Length: 156
Image (cartoon, rainbow, N blue to C red; front, side, top):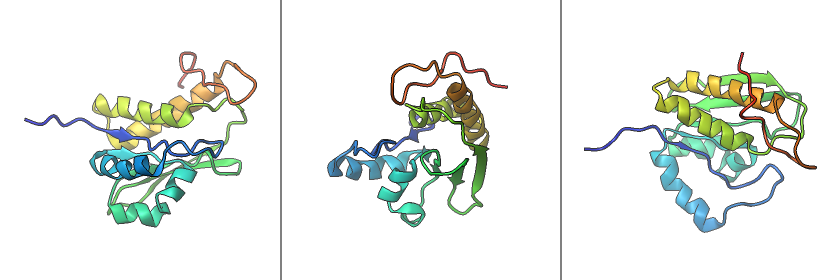
């Protein structure tokens, strides 16, 4: 008997710095993972590498287009569920260099909320709040993109 558990797939292919993190064979394996995932969470560059919104629509999968890597003062995340209206979140950008791990943290938080039975939209909203709180609580380690303040994050 199969177990029905939510799967959140974060296709780590391209770092915020622009560095490629996955070769072509790995990216090809991502196709199967995207098909079985409850949600796929590409960043701006990963979404482009996967064919953009039209490429994702052609796959018929549910995905969260993360906008943290886009330019501008407003961050835009879009949940795309085939056959439904997009759900869009907009937030002012938090001005910090300490953003290392934001995408992985967001995907992990969404998976955690889904695993406790929360609906998808509410899981994403709560996870975005957690990541924003962790950005504000970043301890300031390192000279470059430091880590978030996961343990210190205060969600209001």
